[in-house]
Amino acid sequence: MSVTGTATTAAGAPPAPHQPLTGLRVVEFSHMVMGPTCGMVLADMGAEVIKVEPIDGDRTRHLLGAGAGFFPMFNRNKKSIA
Image (cartoon, rainbow, N blue to C red; front, side, top):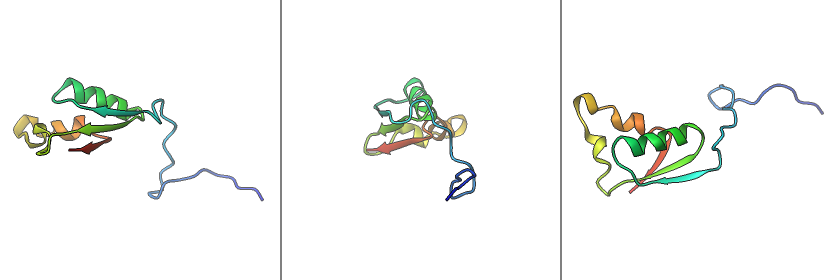
């Protein structure tokens, strides 16, 4: 039996190519700009980044105005635990 073609995800998109940091697990204990930025880059490159937050959550989750997008932007592709 022969199968040809490419696999797709449930949404129909082709699977993501292998990323250089796939298989690496990082635990992030950071707050504000530089730490989350570093974790974001590692996660974007395929690392599993686990962000450890205070029980009431990272303070940047509640920023308003110009800072409102800070948390979702710099913490994308991460898991979070308190």
